[in-house]
Image 1 (spheres, rainbow, N blue to C red):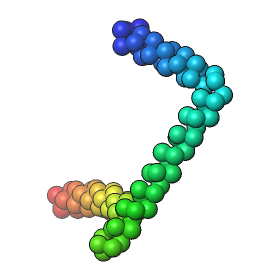
Image 2: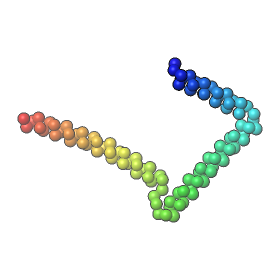
Image 3: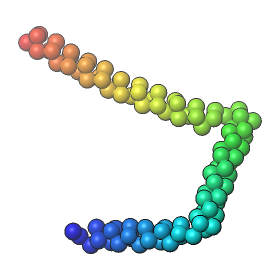
Length: 98
């Protein structure tokens, strides 16, 4: 094992121990859970606000961009497949002409 692996293992062990100590107290664990919940609700509110601003400015929402990106990736893949087929057909036809 290298030094890097040793450091990762030690860091994981220390963080595990810290989490155990942090969550050992029920009140503290509840406070951490509530804080995480508030952060998640805040992010959802921020996302909703961003979506409303995008609509007000007549911009496409983030979800539309993701959908278009997926479609574009699919089209690129299909284009590569068609290009490979055309190239193989071209090679076959040039071999037959010889």
